Image (cartoon, rainbow, N blue to C red; front, side, top):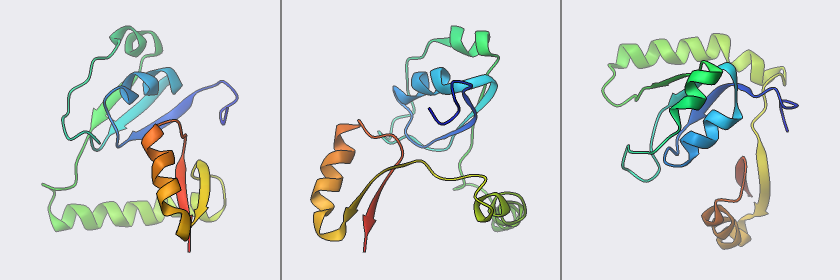
Length: 125
């Protein structure tokens, strides 16, 4: 919905598993999927690679753990220079699913466990 059917140019995935195939569906032609974690802990998935080929997708991965402090500092500087202005100007916004008051944290967690949400589930303090 957010892209009016055009697909997402970049998808940052921290879930993996069956979300990978969903990412391929949601990606734009020539889109990129960046895998940075796996929610289940196991980096295995079954995917339909014809979607990668038809859409000419790039699926890559990275993790911060083995990177040096200098590498991490360079990434922070690049994010500050290139990403933060987009957020400050409102050109990039996180997708929000729902907001719960802090005292309803259990309800928010139940919502998360359904895997039916799209976007962030927020606790309001």
